[in-house]
Image (cartoon, helix red, strand yellow):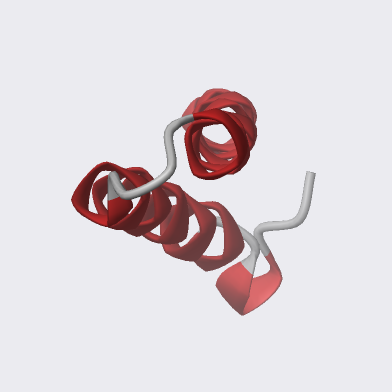
Length: 59
C-alpha cells in the first residue's frame, strides 16, 4: 500500500517540478541555477518513482 502512495506522490512532484523548470526556462532568461535546481528535484523524484517498481512491486 505504501508503494502505491510513494509512486503517486513522486509522480506528481516530479511532473510539477519538471513543468516549473520548463516555465522558468521559458520566462526567466538567465536564471539557469533555478532551472537546474528544479530539474534536480524532478530527477530525484523520477529516480524514486522508478525505484518503487523494482523487484516486482508494480502497482
